[in-house]
Length: 403
Ligand SMILES: Nc1ncnc2c1ncn2[C@@H]1O[C@H](COP(=O)(O)OP(=O)(O)O)[C@@H](O)[C@H]1O
Ligand SMILES: [Mg+2]
Image 1 (spheres, helix red, strand yellow):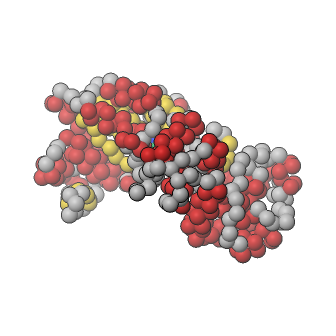
Image 2 (cartoon, helix red, strand yellow):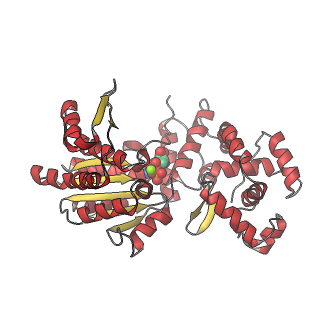
Image 3 (cartoon, helix red, strand yellow):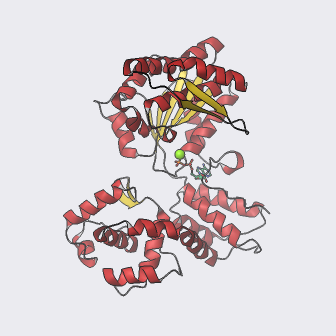
């Protein structure tokens, strides 16, 4: 039997659960040509939700396009990717897609290649001068509205990881977008982003081009009850049962963050291939295997960190939920002073190891926290030398530490 749990790819169909209210709202907004900002930390399910909304819109006859800003690092590349996205949305035959791309970005002299699977990629062979490029971008951004009018249809464009626009074209590109988008009546835009402070700055800061450009939707976690019954159903459909206590453990360990919950379930399921009733111990074993598998990567990250940063991470892993600036915390884990904690925190956030979630600083990757706490757990005390020795010596994980 196939493992019914998937993670790391867009969840659709029977793999997509809950989000009914959000989905309805997105579909209605985009269908009416509105602009929506969808914001949440990574791995909460923005891309999945957005794709499901686009699928629903497509069923209603809306033309839909998708562009992932993580694929783009220059304005020229943006033009190429955008041209491709619009071409795919409006044309059906491969040759007309290719023709369309050549036609809309001529000054970039696009080189279009088609893989054996029919995947089209666009390279750029010329770098036009700035004013020329700006005009090209404006013209490109106008296309969806023109296509919508010509076909008497609505158009919806989804920009994923939109905060990256700032690295691509800075405020100039944002300004160009604003001036074009706000005049378009038949095109809905969805801007999803996981760097919350940048996204918030874009729409809530009145000095920025996107200020009040659209509705802001903060995507929360899937309610635990929903997530649990979705998971139970999946175990049930593959002839396995799971009791409520084990279920609670899964939700707790994975922080009810969809990606982690699904990852954990995938691992639990594969560890119980021949067992009908999933035992409670399967959760800790699965966490152990996941963390073990990621260990080489975590070790190299660990190696790259300064001692003060490691100490802070260890303290946070062992005493999660504690105020990291409290004197008790700082003294117990010998972290020096509040200002040194603040400095390490800022550096770790810049490295993407920590992130702010609703104003609280947390590990970006919960498995990294498990890795650190698993290795520090049996150490005699918060003594850096002792911990570090154990960290290199120990590889076994016995149980998982929760909040
Ligand atoms: N509504 C959902 N139902 C079931 N699984 C989901 C849902 N949303 C997200 N997931 C799971 O979480 C993973 C990450 O979701 P994704 O949409 O990529 O999040 P984001 O774009 O916010 O980083 C998916 O691969 C999937 O396994
Ligand atoms: Mg995403």
